[in-house]
Image (cartoon, rainbow, N blue to C red):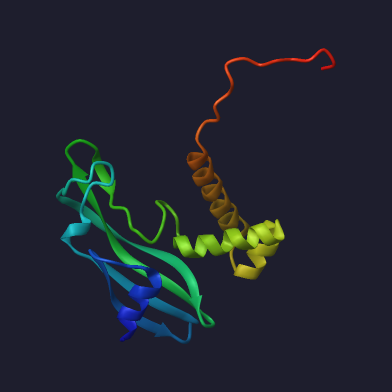
Length: 163
């Protein structure tokens, strides 16, 4: 198995995305992983229809470390122009919208937060800013609240005389 296929497996990247290049930057202590998508990736994130490309912008995400090296994904993410929804950025399977971290990295940060309950401790241990850890926590809370839905209250409530 070559390094590209290895990182595709590690990251869970599947078609229409693929790892195009893996580069070790010893001087920076980083592994840079270039990810590319095919035309199939150019679908509206709202309705799923294939749409014409509007433009693209290179984005970067921090992933779990590879040994002692920070692992950074980079990819040119297309924006499409949907007739119904307008200009939208294509969603990527490895990260949440507007996040600079992969889903697996955010899961590790959340695990650390559960264990320490201190943003400052996690920030120091993970080499992140307080704001980055707080943002990861906020996204996790938002996801949990969406899954939870609205609680159903009973139609009637009884009150005892001692209350």
